[in-house]
Image (cartoon, rainbow, N blue to C red):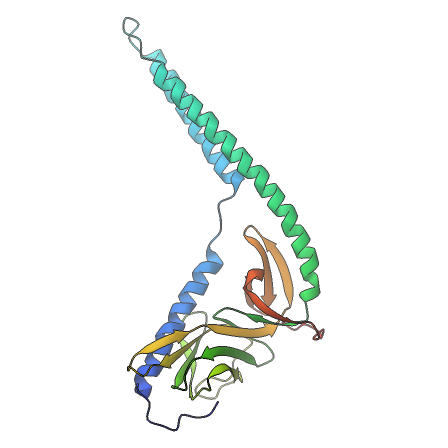
Length: 250
């Protein structure tokens, strides 16, 4: 890639603004995905038990205070009891399924230990700065200019760049410095790549980030890999450099 040398179809300011907006959006999305967690079967069963006990308490109270000369129809009570029993059985089935999934995750976790120390690529906007370096790849269908924006975890833009890509896969390497030239600390960042179109609009490009695996962990949602301060699902891995077996860094 080279520095922009022709008159772009989109102004530099507009292109950079679009990249900054996309990077901030990635920061919010990545933060939300990190904080979200699935409700476990045990939690669902506990909630069901509370509701079931509440139902029985209300039922008992109603029966105690009903008019003896005009007793309530028990058909509705029987129907609700049957529904509760059916839901309880379904939750227990899901709990057993979760046990099987957990066993599968244990096997995945064991086999994934071999990834530690290897270089990998992620189909993600999460960017791990390790040893003062990080890389971002993207595919371009044209030679229209692109803008790259990097934000910190708070969504603040800390580094931008404008490039003229080649058609096909392009790789941009970040030296870990901010726009002011300050060397930033290793950690988790967010990246976005936006390209100008011939019609005068902009389009966000899918990013692939690289890094070294420093650990793996099992969560309620599956097995995650750690690249320094970045944690992401093992399903996000798009490539593994099997020849790289160096020492992992955090």
